[in-house]
Amino acid sequence: MKPNLRVTQLKSTIGEKHPFRATLHGLGLKGPGTVVVVGNTPSFRGAIKKVLHLVRVEEVDHG
Image (cartoon, rainbow, N blue to C red; front, side):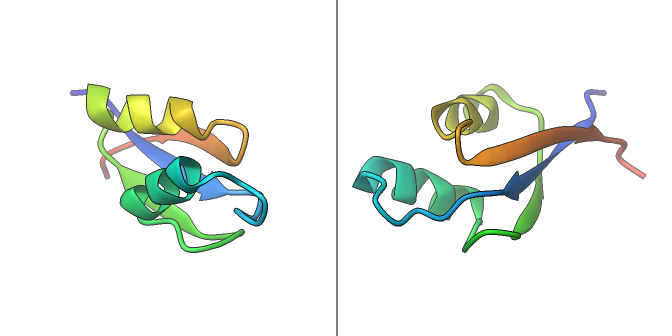
């Protein structure tokens, strides 16, 4: 099984275009410092790639 991804929002969405804000909201991120763990699936990886300039991504084990 693939490890999950821990996504941490590093920057604010102030000044960002609406699609970037919507993508962060869809990932469950609500502001700088927010951390979520999502599955390592193509849909999540695509969303993360779209907002890579605003987040930090780390692989984490399932346990």
